[in-house]
Image 1 (tube, rainbow, N blue to C red):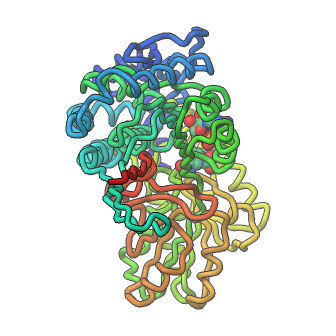
Image 2 (cartoon, helix red, strand yellow):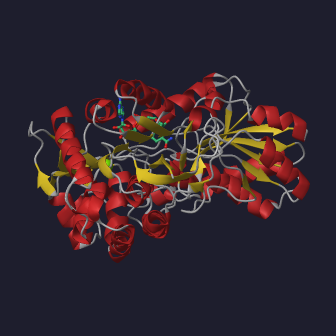
Image 3 (spheres, helix red, strand yellow):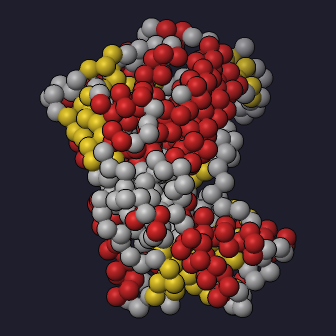
Length: 510
Ligand code: NAI
Ligand code: MG
């Protein structure tokens, strides 16, 4: 890993990094909670720290919400939902605010890109090109929906009131106060996926970012106020999952909880939500199959399979983490992917040449490393990678594992790191049951030139998304979500608006 060692032991102190002066100010600041339009300390006055995973150094200090602050935020969101300017606004006015938020994000693109890279570790080339532009795009796509959410008129034929005439119609209404909890892998973009449709639907929000990566959501909170959203419409309350997150999921005055994160915590959310039977949507883990047929265009399929797993350091819920390759092409594809892994520039995200940064935190590095070791213990072999890199920072080499079998832990469980397991297959009918042999059903990939086969596979894969001759393509207009234990509901597209609104039937006798 010449790139890494060649950096003279890394750019260490944050003061030495070539960052935007505004970003330096954001990291020097002590961040507070956004509740009811004001920035306030936690009632307990507790704080927590977020770190730069490239160096392990302290990045910023943030107020830490607990159940008392969550309750304050929920009350503020309730007031904003029931009274004041938000419910009185026209749908077009709401849409304009959301559009403006997208514009503000683009105006501050460089700031957001740097702040995200420092807090999460992902490469600056990626935050500039992917995370921040997609965030703006999502807000502006959702802005357009605000004034297009409609009910229907419905002809009635009630058999037991012969001759009676009715006028019946549906109203599409907001749910109310929505609690949203997101993970650390795409902190700003996940904020947009959640906030965009909630606001377009006319709801108010209590939003909890992940402990490892609170900064871009807090900065977004400032822009939300700058855009002119009324106070209390969006409240931003970082805090520990088991305390702040659990309190939000359990709160009796929250109408819906939307969660993205691990399947284990998703199950806890469902439990916490039973008190008032709030609506629940979940976007959870994955162990997504990526299937390469021997007739595929290998110039696309090999780099495609590499980026399916290595993009965002494998910290992607839909990462193509099980690579199935048709006999005859197995060596070419696995060696090709391993070669791509060896060529990847691993280093601090702030270096523009970096292609893979550190994992988000030491505990994630330990988790991923435990998986790699378990793979070796169960007989897998690394074609590339398979080593942790010396600190500072939480780096691991991009890893391709062969000699695997379907019962290995590395094949069955979500690793959430840059580790792919490779498996040969001989026929389409053999690979389908293998690909579907998982509790998850989030993403999947198919690489082939045979159109009929591509469509057959697309129908038969049990997953919320099937990418054909591409992978990890996301668009604000395209629904995304899980089959099986990968979740409940969908994000994005017009699908998601159904999950942030409810239908009221109005029936009038004429
Ligand atoms: P996590 O699921 O614990 O954290 C995600 C969010 O949930 C964070 O905001 C956290 O504060 C919150 N949370 C945690 N416990 C909670 C609780 N009891 N009630 C309410 N909210 C709670 O994920 P973690 O621990 O950061 O990562 C562990 C593993 O989870 C990863 O290795 C990966 O396998 C999986 N994961 C999957 C993600 C996905 O997008 N599918 C994202 C993040 C993690
Ligand atoms: Mg951090």
